[in-house]
Length: 109
Image 1 (cartoon, rainbow, N blue to C red):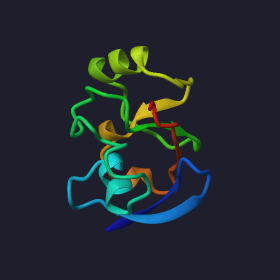
Image 2 (cartoon, rainbow, N blue to C red):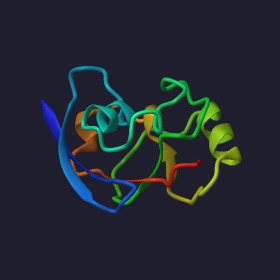
Image 3 (cartoon, one colour):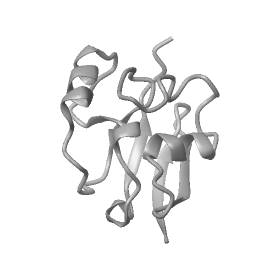
Image 4 (tube, helix red, strand yellow):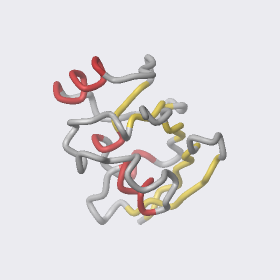
């Protein structure tokens, strides 16, 4: 089953995408698979919560898993962090994400 997710890229363009819930993907991998961020600017650490290149801002009131310590620590050091910042690699694609709306944080370069 797919869920509909809206991803606003770094240029401010909104993309409604279908994200599969049965492939154990995370939100960062969905952004990469739709090429909504230039290669090498997102998911640099491979989804290990060791960089903040996949930071995004949650713009809907979608229920998300709690932040783990790794994610909290990384966001504490990242640039452009807001109250609604999350690392998209730490958000697994599940049916609960239907209607999620996120905006990609600016690139840190």
